[in-house]
Length: 335
Figure 1 (cartoon, rainbow, N blue to C red):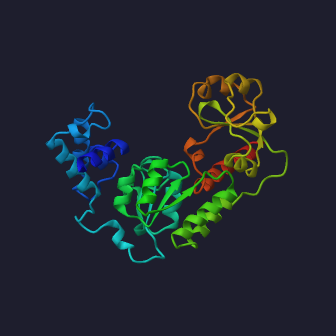
Figure 2 (cartoon, helix red, strand yellow):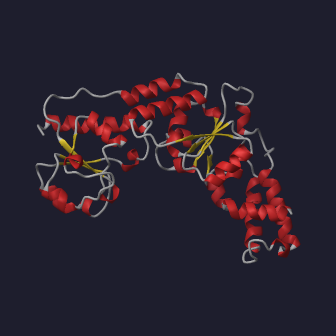
Figure 3 (cartoon, rainbow, N blue to C red):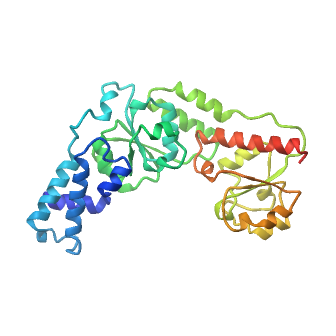
């Protein structure tokens, strides 16, 4: 019976190999979890091809591996203090596991390090979370069993969390707080304050909100037109966060003036035929690197890191600073 349950878990959740788990920071300081993961993977591999319900055909050896893997993966780790121990017993300072990189970036600025048991593995290399945090905090790949094993007080997740994972976390008694992708500065501020409030440190949101809302003084005169050329040569809609930040930085939307909508494709020929004052390139396609773009002296070309478009939160201040630098350079150049 245990072998059947373990096989179901291994197949349903796609357990990573021990090597991958170690790389993602899943096994961390719990040495028993790596062989447990390998045991589950081995039993699932041996049962491959038997059919989804042919558990009676699993050998005794395979059944033992399944049972052993299940017992060890779901058991608490006794090799050293659990990360939660530092924050346990203080309901005003709950512990967290975050499953979304945008939420990760907010959490590390609004909660104490001891409150953060793990971040999403996406934050390992995406640059949204400062390196000092990524070197100290473990990562999870998002499977229900690894989250349940950490026993956080609160799980932060996107509204797009897999329904099966969400259901498993709820059944285990964990509190799951879901967040959407805010499309305005005001909505982002509300999200920051909500996360800071959950962590028991609402005051920590104050400085971050101040950075997010700081806008530069704009020079009088007609606003230069700007076209944001995103990856795959598409443009943002006017109801997006980046469109709001461009307007507040003193730019007029070139794509809106041409009747373009969210995710409309803009070929190189269109840019050349009717260039904006500023071409803000956030992609790396052939068209976006074409040498003909440099033959348009009336159009200024600047680059924007596409990673800054993935999330709001702390990225808002970074985008504002980048746009302010560009606008300042254009004003000085008389563009």
